[in-house]
Structures are given as C-alpha cells and as structure tokens.
Image (cartoon, rainbow, N blue to C red):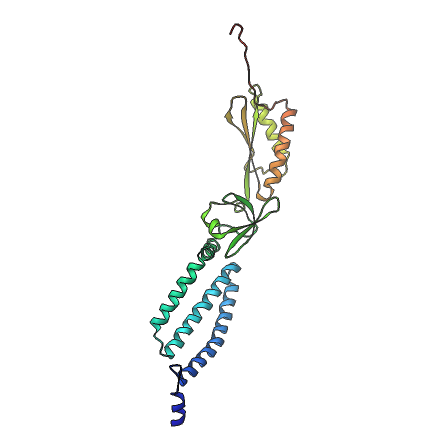
Length: 270
C-alpha cells in the first residue's frame, strides 16, 4: 500500500498521478452519463410540440452546459482554481461571440421566431418587402418560395426586425376590387352587375355577404368597390377571376368603364 500511495502521489506535469487517474475516470463516467441524459432529454423533447429547430437548439445548449459542468468538476479534482477556469471560459466565449456576432444574432433571432411562432411552414407571409410561402424556419434563415417559384433565404435577424404579415392565420380573406365608371352610369345598375358577378363565382362566400360601395369620386370617374369574402386558399384564383368577370357583367348591363380624359376648349379671339 505505501508503494501504491507513493505511485499515486507521483507528480506528472504538476498534477499527482492519483488525481489524473481520477480525472480520467470522471471523464469516462461523464461520457456515459451525458449520453444517457441526452437520450432522455431528446425523448422528452420529441414528445413535446416544439419545432425541430427548437429541439435541436435545446439539445445543443444542454450538451454544452453538461460538458462545462464536467470541466469544472475535473478542474476541482486537479486543484485548478474554478475562478481561473471560469475566467478563461468567459474570455474564450467573448472572443467566440465577437467573431461570430452576425451568426449568433441570426441564431438568437431564429430562436425568438421559433418561440413566438408568428408563422409556420406552409403559411403565406409578407416579410418586409418579400412575399411568399414559408418552406422552413431554421436557426439561421427563413426560407420562402415566391409565387413565381423563386426560393428566397432571409436572415433571421432581418426577418425578426421586419414587419411580419401572415395571410394564412385566418380561414377567410376579403377581396377588395375597385372599378372606375363614368359619372353617367346608373349606380344601382352598377351595384347589381357587380353583385351578380360575385354570386356567379362559387368561391365567394355568402356569409358575410358581398357588398358594393362607392369608395371615391375622381376627376373622370366614380369608383365602386366590390368586397367579397373567400376561403384563404382561394384568394388569388378568385381575385383574378372576379377582376375579369366583373368587366363582362358591367358591359352586359350597359355600364361603361371610365378612362382619363382631358377636355380642351378653344376660345375664339384668345
């Protein structure tokens, strides 16, 4: 035993052999424990309703925290001052964060978007000046596909800082169509023609009922607005179909669309 104790007290690089062996044992045990803990955390997260990106982020944070804890335990076993180790980790973390400032900004913005969930995959949204369908929302980018099939990747920091309009959260959307007609047109005939066009489209909902209002008096026309409600997925198909059919119904009713005109008067002798 004295020989074993002497062997364990042998110093290697300023550390006793016994403490080094204990540190190795702690490290090996930690490998097994952390692996088991990560499996348990992963299963718990899979049972939750969190998005996959959030689950991945939580798993990464948990793994880092567990290994930092192991490092502190090993440092204590090797008689390394914990305060010194924490200081070194803090400086390293600061240098790392400064070198990856933009990346980390996107990560935290992505985490904010994933937690607040202003949109989900498949939603039709407007992010700043970009409009499209959300394909994915990760820790770095929000990916949209536009109506003309362009795939656009928006950095999370830009997406989180912009105004977000989600057109898919409500089951129904209202279509507003404006038509400029001549002042000589019969208001009731115009109204009935537009309502007939709306009722002929099966996508238009009856509740709320379609309505026609005079929305503006302009220099060469009276502006009538047709307002109808449709299911959100039917919005664009109904929008373009009504835009075309309303003109046909107005022409059948004998109501003329207005156009800009300029009256020129010639005064003799001037």
